[in-house]
Image 1 (tube, protein in one colour):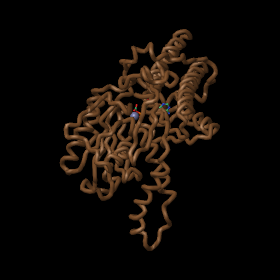
Image 2 (spheres, helix red, strand yellow):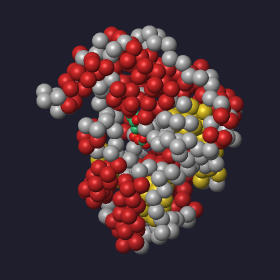
Image 3 (tube, helix red, strand yellow):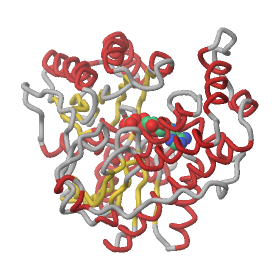
Image 4 (cartoon, protein in one colour):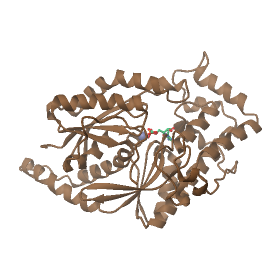
Length: 423
Ligand code: KG4
Ligand code: ZN
């Protein structure tokens, strides 16, 4: 384990990604091939198409990641791959490729949970920033000092990372709250809350589809919400009663297949299927459907639809009522994410919050979480936009403590579409 160079591979959903990260702290390369254009016309990810696209992209993406990092295959110390949760066929492409590479190179294979990866996107960038700030002025004895410093950095990072963090992972497949605790250079996770049905990103995608906007819906709603009145439509979230939820068994929806919820505090449970239905009712009641169909045609599916529709073009197709609906939907979703996250933070006494996953790219979410954390005197961190959505740097970073601890995946590793994180 000379340099701690890990190649990360991620293929759990609709992004084929590869990255090289050094010692969990320095991103040497990060390449993401998005399949958005393939799935856009269907308004969501089509699993069979996703597997096919991953098969096409995996070899060039891995090659590009190695080339961008300026390293050869022989320089790698380990290969990390997402083993779940995600789409079975999509995960298998990455796993099979990673296994073959690890076998051929005779280096360890490390399995990473996708959700843990999202948490490590934030930790990786925190370390990266710290290292940059601590970088000494170039001097004559630079080389020996550099190698010495690596060891020192690890211990100082260890100190600064000693605090537990409440992590909100909010994406197209998940809305989960974890308490992440550092333990002997590694991390443990306890599930604190989660959605009982749809994920927040899923609600964004479904509402956008209903309104004739593109896929994924989050960025469209994010961009258009600022033009509407967020107080126009009073959406509300009912308190969730755990006991009534299938006797604590996991609900059978795409977003919420993994862990039982009976032991979780109902105050930290999310539910986004209600607001999606409320938006649908609003659309029906106010007869907004024909306008949404026309919008879809004009922007995406019609013969005159532009190749890359802009926000301005979308805005031109929206009347004030639709913009108010979009703004109100977003305000309500973010308000609910905040309410439950800060309730959990208070209850657990956490002084540090991480918000990560695709929805963490949202501008209003960032602004409101930042203001509330400042008011409460808490430390809050998001990944940069590039690391908020799916990528492989976060997978390589999450694998670093495993490489140090010698926790390797067996050669029988397979995809686990509903892999849970923590207890
Ligand atoms: O983490 P991610 O790339 O993939 C999953 O693991 O699901 O998250 C994708 C999700 C999609 O639902 C997308 O609509 C949402 O993140 N998203 C956003 C924004 N950018 C992406 N939601 C709200 N605002 C955004 N700016
Ligand atoms: Zn993700």
